[in-house]
Image (cartoon, rainbow, N blue to C red; front, top):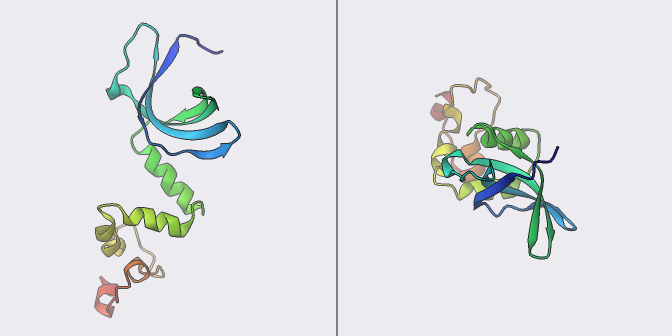
Length: 138
């Protein structure tokens, strides 16, 4: 049942519109839902993905998903990439803008979780770094 006493305070709109069609689109925002008579609190805000309906300058929130944990968004992104979603070239270009990109690429094979010897070396692919046989054994 719809609760008219609930309000949404958007603390940050990440400006990521997706799945646009007609007057609807998906959005990613840091928001808090609260009841009338209470004050919104940024500490209680959570990342959400929500369908938004637009008509002129007005927006109406539709169904959405609010992440329960700070790890949830990263787990979703990694999972979607793992099953083939996302344009690989665009994803790499986006990741290359991150401060930790070079360090992550250089240490791609240093993860303790990677026991697969048949994996290729991302450093060769992304940075054209030649890897010596000594580096491959580490």
